[in-house]
Length: 168
Image 1 (cartoon, rainbow, N blue to C red):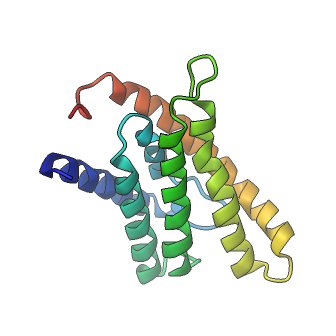
Image 2: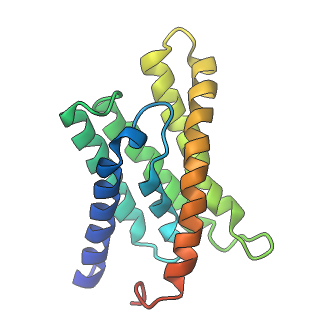
């Protein structure tokens, strides 16, 4: 990875982390709209952003746990980061599969991954006697917030794609 790419990855991670922490009341918990998750669609136009959003998610969840503002604690630094990495990677893999010119399946990856991973994490922590039901309930709340972030992310990526920002 060259210095320019490494710098971009670091900037993406920093933006993800700062946006998440500034909007902390909306970032954590079972009802969340993590606006920084809009960046998980950057792999549609820039593959190295997979690492930027993954690092940003890890730092956000770790700092949130250390500050006591992330109710899921340190577990979220692992589970949430795995979900974000998987979603970003699959977004990149599916970027060329389009319906009417829109990469619908790629855009749904953050919603799907967070529904299952974060939904299950929340169920495990807060509804341990009802894991399946808890995953469905918590996952649905997380998915709604994620869908809002993805819609924002789609328009962000469309705008960024018109710039020269991610040209190697």
